[in-house]
Image 1 (tube, rainbow, N blue to C red):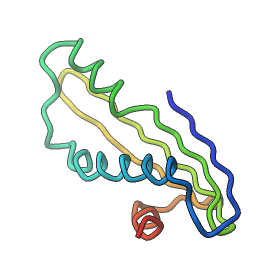
Image 2 (cartoon, one colour):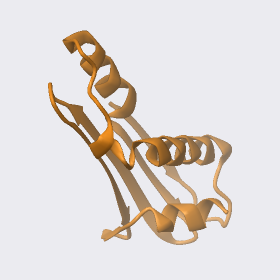
Image 3 (cartoon, rainbow, N blue to C red):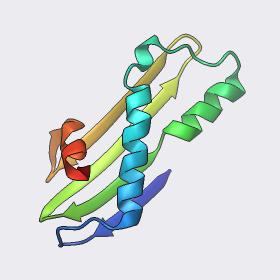
Image 4 (spheres, rainbow, N blue to C red):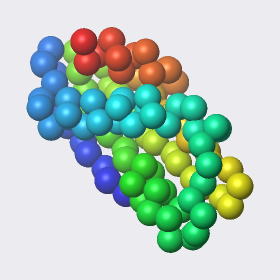
Length: 103
């Protein structure tokens, strides 16, 4: 599990947080339709995918708002599950809050 905490009270996001958020958004575009994906055939492949896409948690402050991002990904023998949880000041939001932030 990777946890990144960046606390800035300015109107700019540092490059490390910005690149991590962009990577999460890129993976989200691929994984958002994971209901239609097929899981790997063997357990090693499923564990590899879970390690690649799961466990990233980012907390940072931007323009007076606290953002928290958490990805959840799991594969069973028959199904693939994915979710991205975004909280802004403790209130659950959807991915549009991140896309507006990066623009």
